[in-house]
Image (cartoon, rainbow, N blue to C red; front, top):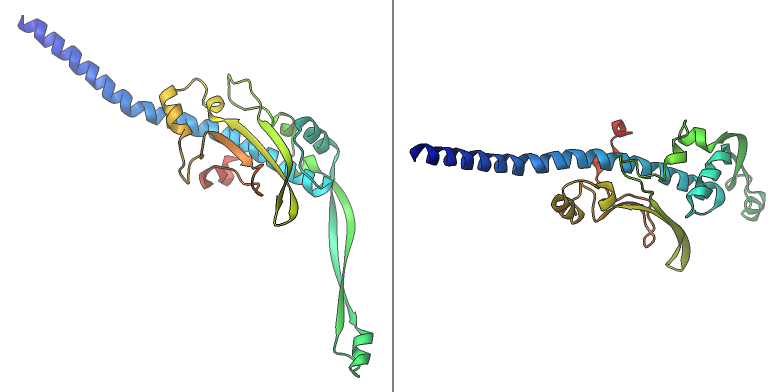
Length: 219
């Protein structure tokens, strides 16, 4: 009887020890994998943002179509320019005040020196052709891309937004921890229930992630 009790106690101890270990290692492993997945997703969102900003600079607006964005990158070119400032006397004003020199006019001229392909300037590879895919192994999904315009202080501004739900990014991971992560609102983490860059409601091209994901060695 005593031996049976000892065996039962050992089973209980082992069970409780495993539960304690799981309660510590589970969140640790979740956070470790979560950060790896977030970084991959954010790198793609940065590529999307770079492409959208180039599209706005050259075409004058953002686009809500990945097909259009890829075609644009394939063919568009940045102009390499040089600014020249010329300064000369304002003859009329100087004459009006009865002086030889005193007032000057500054004129700026922009010379186009050459052109360089957008895809070479921004990427140096063909990775922009797959930037619309959520880069998580086993996940078959694409980012949601929108573009349009909003009014602010009487002026019209072009905006865009690229997003993916955290449910998709963290697919296959502990559901309770995923639920908690969707409520996150920390400065250094990824805020809210999705990973996002840009906004359809605000004039911004920022992402909703912390500065740690913007480190140079993460690219």
